Amino acid sequence: MARTLLGALLNKTSAVAAQTPVPFASRAASYSGGLFGSSRTAEGQMRAMSAVGTLFAIVDRTSNATALVDWKLYRKAKSGRKEDRTEVTSHAALDLWQKPNPFMPRQEFVESFQQHQDLTGEAWWVISRAKGVRLPLEMWPVRPDRMMPVPDRDTFLRGYIYTSPDGEQIPLALDEVIQLRRPNPLDPYRGLSPVLSILPDLDTSRYASEWSRAFFVNSAQPGGIIEVPSALSDDQFDELRDRWNEQHRGVGNAHRVAILEHGKWVDRTISQRDMQFVELRGATADRIREAYGISKTAIGDFEDINRASALAAKSWFAEQQTVPRLERIKAALNHELLPMYGATAIGLEFDYEPPTPPDPEVEAQQLTARSAAAAVLVREGFDPVGVLSAVGLPEIPFAGRPTTPGQSMPAASWDDTVASLLGTEVEAAMRWEVVTEHDDNVCGPCAEQDGRLYRNRAQAYRDYPGGTGYIHCVGAEYGNDCRCKVIKRKKTRDDE
Figure 1 (cartoon, rainbow, N blue to C red):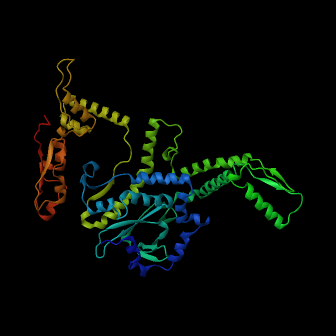
Figure 2: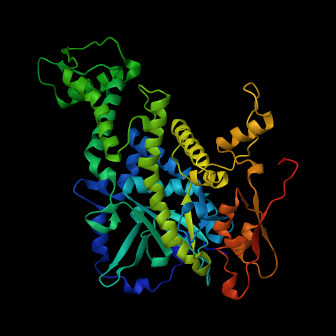
Figure 3: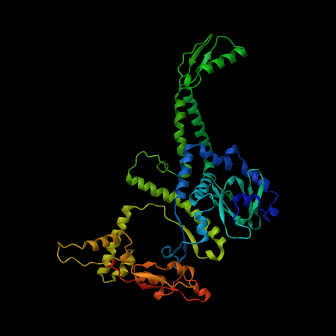
């Protein structure tokens, strides 16, 4: 049974412990404080999310957008092109990524560590394994303020130290931790947080909020002064203060008539400076958005927007905010997690589904350009099937040219043609099929190809040169012939 994170961290025995350098304690202390107090620590940066509304909105939006993207596992193609890759639907690494641990599905796992990444510049995954098993069985996100790299002058990095909530320091080996970070120009071991660049602005926003709250708790009225003709003793002063607070402080006591003995009330009107202090909150929110490079629209602040600008804003957010975060995750999966699976992961790679929404106008322009190019090539005598494949259009069945100006194309053929032009996968257009012989010698890549369809022979022969022998077959490594080939599909009643 896989150990939980608690067991992996608290019951850990590792050679790293004996090699931990003495200066580690002083190094850890250097990260725990700063010139501006506790707010510069990783814990302070994470707490800022719940203290400032603008920061919460930014981190919540970016972490949610990153977590909602779908991921797939592929086997790389010899050509190196993405379109030639084949999807792998069954692998232990894929199962782990979909369910990192018993308590978190992938979406919650990604959202959790992405919050850490956006707030502190770092995200940490701790790998859990069963005793005697080297394959990763669980992954857990841990707080950045509890993790500490252990530098080494020869190997750059010796391991990591996890500090438990009770203060115990637990050593972790290199293959037990995966770190994602925004590079820090001053420290190659740690990440850099945007929060550090806006600490004064975050404090300003919090203080402005507290000032506003105090203003309205006082019935949205400024304070004033009680003047007395002579000095008061301590007892008289305390009595006057307590009586005034009891009768007039708070929203419930607003506008009550004040009766003063031996004193008078001097009102203090609100100044222009006070009014500008209230408006300061808006300017502070702009500084926070600038640090994260995010617009008002991205966090739901819509002032003047139409459908076109909304689509453009959505595309911009995906390209400039979501994609960079996904690329950092992809690098961790492909270069650190997959190698832990040894030979079974050779030639595999994780990749995400593009988060950028399609632009209908651009797609229509591309379709028009491809159709025009195909018409020119066919008119010059090139093979129509090869032309459609070359310009990126699906194979389109031709129903014949109308004999008279008023004659129209048959409805069924017209529907097929329109559907093909719009990019719909029409079953009748898939003319070649992979047939795999399932026996004891069939390899995994060939077994996964059984039943795969191709539009034309050119596409099929790219994966099966001459019609037989899958280019990704690994059976030859064990002295076996390839078990799959492509054949021309027979027309069915639906194809006619």
